[in-house]
Figure 1 (cartoon, rainbow, N blue to C red):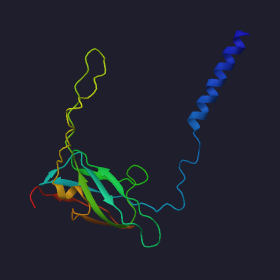
Figure 2 (cartoon, helix red, strand yellow):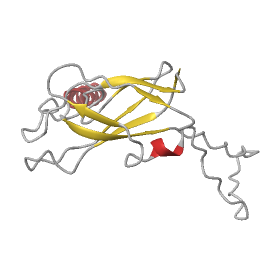
Figure 3 (cartoon, rainbow, N blue to C red):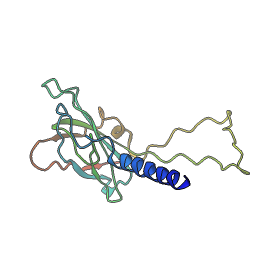
Figure 4 (cartoon, rainbow, N blue to C red):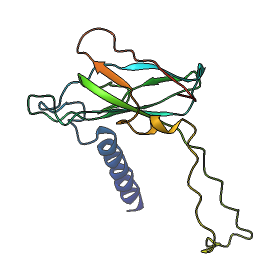
Length: 168
């Protein structure tokens, strides 16, 4: 009797594992109404030096003129200032359109003091939270004021480099 129980448990575990591995299916299918994307990349520098850890956002217009909404695309710069945009999936690019651009990078907030003895220490209500410090000039934080534009095309290379300036 014990052998049948062990076998049943093992068979159930194998069946569950197979279901988990197979997933729900259909994950690779792209919805037919999704606007196609095209690879977009580039380099962001601040005063000629690579800007690492900045978030680059291509802000889309309301629609593409044919009634289809255009999604925004986003990427993060690496240590060399390089970025690749993502819209639907990682590094898939952006849809063809003209975009306004924002580039943001903030100083990491200070870490909360570690609790001693594993006890939770609530934040002091008398201490006001400190707003994170922007590490890029303020005009680049707002896509409507940055002056940065990109025209993503369905064909050809979509490489957009941005050299930000500390002083206008």
